[in-house]
Amino acid sequence: MPKTPTDSRLSNLSAAAIHAAFDQYQTQFKAITRRARARFEDQDWRGMQADAVERLDLRKKIIDQIVTETRQRLKNRVHDKLIWASTKAVYSSLIADRDDWEIAETFFNSVTRRIFSTIGVDPKIEFVDTDFDTPPTRSARPVIRVYPGAGSTAALIANIMADYPFRVGFQNLSRDAQLVAAEVAAHLRALDAAPSVERVELIDSAFYRGNGAYLVGKMYCGALIVPLALALLNSPEGIVVDAVLLTEDEVSILFSFARSYFHVAVDRPYDLVRFLKSIMPRKRIAELYIAIGYHKHGKTELYRDLLHHLATTDDKFEIAPGDRGMVMLVFTLAKYDMVFKVIKDHFDHPKTTTREKVIEKYQLVFTHDRAGRLIDAQEYEHLEFERRRFSAELLGQLQRAAASSVVIDDQRVVIHHVYVERRVTPLNIYERQASEEAVHAAIIDYGNAIKDLAAANIFPGDLLLKNFGVTRHGRVVSYDYDELTLLTDCNIRPLPAPRDDDEAFSAEPWFYVGENDFFPEEFQTWLGLASPWRKVFIDRHADLFGVDFWKCTQERIRSGEVIHIYPYPPSRHLSAKWESGCET
Image (cartoon, rainbow, N blue to C red):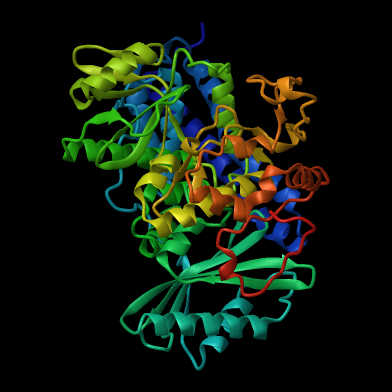
């Protein structure tokens, strides 16, 4: 008879296997990430899209594999928590010399939660908090490059750009350096700051996303520290600096929770995230990890942040303000800028979708280019909270509308499936409450959001104001995904003319309407904007009411074009670099 392995042997074997799987994940993650520079140089935008999807799928593939192997190794001992407590201790020692220890801890958690389906948290078998109060390793090399000021700002900028060599040359390095220097000088004058740049610190690697590359850091100008992001495009004539971003808000929008993740080569994510935090202090650590592609660790950090908030406040979960959703039950905490969305057991009329289809839509948003217009949602399972933290009204709604996802007893509330995302102000509420200037800008950006989504091959389905929200930066984003579909799957049709008065005044369509049919002319009918905002929208976005804009965008996408969506407004362009037969 073969000898039965001891608990210690099983723990050591399991820890080593999980560590090897994590190492495999990181090796492949970094290999995919490093391709981004060549994709940018070669203008291989379709390849960049494919890499983004491959990297998003990578983690699940490796977790699936190691979970299967672990089940086979442990067999009937797979749920033995004594073995797993020892496995965690051994694993912690194995990752203590790594520069990505915090990512490794989250990887381990994913394995244990898949095996145990843990309700709440179990610190014996998962890293609820990190095992390391301080980084267990020293930085092998700095995450930034430092450029002392010498002479003119233009010369400094030219030196910086030349230090980030691409296989493709700059179209006109001297011109772009002068343009950037002029923007910096104007910005410093507006701040009444010292006119010279004493030092620049830039992250060692460029950030790549979509068709763009970005050099990100900060400038020291006397007592003032100024964010700095140089947006690069690879034009047919060479690389150009298309924009320079100089405020926390502008850089924060670049790293928005509504955008797809960056590809940036980094060995020590901890240092990178802390440097980014120094530029964008209002962003959560969780959001910054997510922005650089470590979305699962960002999810871990967000959960820790939520637990800290609950432990240090008396905040209660309550129903979120705004129109009640037909598909999702949405609640929030008054002092916490996140919302929690649970799929209802039954959907209100006229919704005909299913739970499975709603989950598919969220998965589509996760893997698709979000164009800065779709809120990134973090999916959680088996969360446990004290019942006393829920308002009576919310408890009643959860019991009536989401009993299959939520279990409530005398002491606790267990939510088996929930999406957590940033809270925004619904556009229909914002229209009534914000200043005239802010509403004017939001109404115009509402149309911009629809166009950006179309350029990313997304049709929101339901274009009503209540399904869009306004961020703290005044940007309009979409957060209702149950009717979202690919624009190329839509059948864009002109509205048939009525043949007689009966058809003209009929309450119901007199013509056949297919599932994916969209009649742009009808958009005006249910636009839902009060005067004068309706006129503001129509004056700027009348093309959304005709078939030409939609069909043109479809044709561009179907032809293989990857339409670049800028993470900054037209006013920030240093010069026009992209031309097209139709606007986006």
